[in-house]
Length: 304
Image (tube, rainbow, N blue to C red; front, top):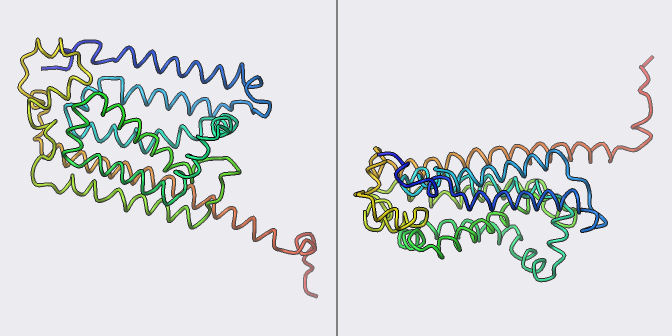
């Protein structure tokens, strides 16, 4: 049995695609045509920022609007791949893609600035994201969220914002938010890796399937209603996700935890390398600046 039985709407999410296109159009119009009207201190949108923003939109549609989203309700391993990309890959790309003047315009709103300054404090941001992510994977919470449209949308948005808060201290380019340098940033990345490990370990080393929305046919069908119209599901004779997934449930669950951990290690490793080399360059510049000017410009004469 193939995924085509769920219909075009469930497979390709046309309304979500339209939303993505509208967001993209509004962003590029604001960042190019109307940028001088919106801010007299705006800078031109760079090719890198434009490419990154398009990448963000494409990734969003692939993981939340394409058949991968439907498959994520059938295979736990695909679901965890979605989680990893949505919360570990997209947020840092988005932070860099949005021009500084737009971030400043958003943060100029008093209530947003107050909240942002508090939740992006490194220790708070680190605990809030990893705590929210780990809390989500408690079986009773996971199953409740996966079977309720409102809770699912609310928790997805909440996790996405906490991911932005978590990435902000080390990714943002605003000078007024640059109070976190060097070894502290490296420690921050290591801290994130450590705090995310228990949730992944719980999933990887579980001795039985943990989530009813992937193992119980009744709850699975309820969870499927989040992406498939109920009228379509009622006309299908499906016993459970095993109809589409040949991998045993426990193996699928373990694979999901491993995928999440691998993607996390890759992303954090890339960011860690970038931070380390940036820190090294800054230290070299500071070392040169500390050398007296006469020594920097004087010629070294050979010994006679």
